[in-house]
Length: 69
Image (cartoon, rainbow, N blue to C red):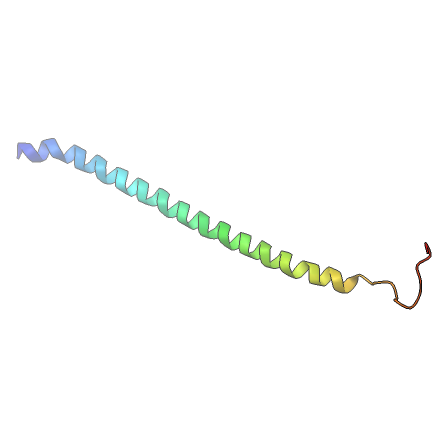
């Protein structure tokens, strides 16, 4: 019984440490997944954005010369 009394505090502290580290790693994983989703959305928005701008921009007609010429 003395062995249990001696080892129990170390085992309890070890379990608390394990649960704390597990929660930290899970939070980090969730944060990395959220960051990856946000970056993917930003990339997809950036990829569609130039197409929308290109449609709104008008190019000068090819049959008329520029005023500078």
